[in-house]
Amino acid sequence: MGTLITIAQFILALAILVTLHELGHYLAARMFGIRVEKFYLFFDAFGFKLFKYKKGDTEYGIGWLPLGGYVKIAGMIDESLDTKQMSSKPEPWEFRSKPAWQRLIVMIGGVTVNLILGLGIMIAIKYISGDTYIPNKAINTGGGIYASPVARELGFKTGDFILKLNGKDVENLGDEFANPDFIMANKKEVLVSRNGKDTIIQLPNNLEEYLGKKSELGFISPRYKFKVFKIASGSEAAKGGLKVGDKILKLNGKDAAVFPEFKELISGLKDSTISLLVAGTDNKERELKLHVSSEGTLGFNPEYYGFENQEVRITYNMGQAISKGTSESFSLLGANIKALGKVITGKVNAKKTLAGPIGIAQMFGSKWNWANFWMLTATLSLVLAFMNILPIPALDGGHVVFLLWEMITGKPASEKALYIGQLIGMIMLAALIVFIFWVDISRALGF
Image 1 (tube, rainbow, N blue to C red):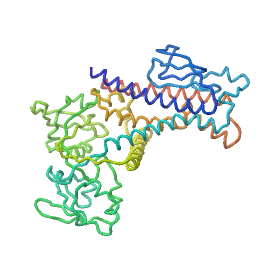
Image 2: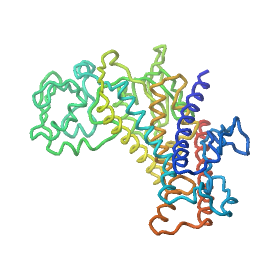
Image 3: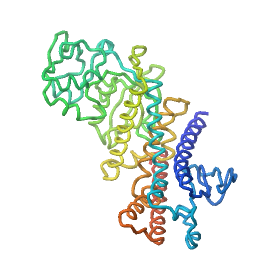
Image 4: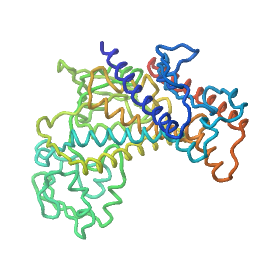
């Protein structure tokens, strides 16, 4: 049952993303009087279709291969590589008969819709659900802060109780510490309690430079305890015997029950074998030997606990939700772009970083969680927009390059150039799809 729920969530998200992406092309084409011959959710490879019907000049349908979808626009060399109609005299309702600027709008229609969808979902999440934070009082009761290596450079220590910022009591530590009024103040004093004694930490004028040294560990954070929530198939965690619900207590004999402290410890043990003391769901302790990947990970997602019923919810009006949702959307997209850049440059192992259809489906989980579903759908929509606008033949971005060239030079690319570019792009995409499926399958089988 869990597998069926995972597949259902993945198919639903893909259907939403693909349908709206292709709808962007479709509506832009129809707006300029361009005929759309086909509109398909999923690919009807080898001519096999699950469903079809025709209305007007357009055949609408659902294919059997859930790897995307397409619209076939009259008078355009696309994935079908149909060049027969290109040999006849251009008709006024064909793509090739329209001005370059109109064709450009048609080509970016899908990307535009995906960008708007991603932003819209994130804004809606902020407006409906808001944000939550752990009150500073609860952080102090729960063991104080975790101080990252960067924070320790400035004098903080893990276990510090933060009491005041520039003489003012603290409620929402994350927001107040990152408040521009505090960061830009001439005096930046933090009163902390350490080992029962009050201590004042004087922060430097260039505090923003330290806060800018972002990492997975953050700058300072609550000391969340954690347990294993999801385990990636074929991961070091799976091979080493870690189970969902396990609580990690010690790593190589050192306390590791707090997630950021565990994360810092393990990130310094890349490509090594470690010993974990864990407590199972039955509270029985056992010792495991696991290998840490070259990225300093084991391959599981944590579930935090320790501050139950202490979180405070922040609500946003529509203006605030738009600002917050937009900001977080572009931060999320930027993080994904940076991760892709590291894969391309060889800084990280593609096999352990990329996720294909199988890996993405697993992210939805075996239980239907609407919050997780919509967050993942928003992320995928933003990533899909970015990937599609890349200047690669066969992608929307490849067509955009040809159109921009035409608009700059006043000369359209030849049909031969368009055909060859489309063919090369399709070969590249086919190779990429095969590679991603190999990554998914090899990870699942533990290769």
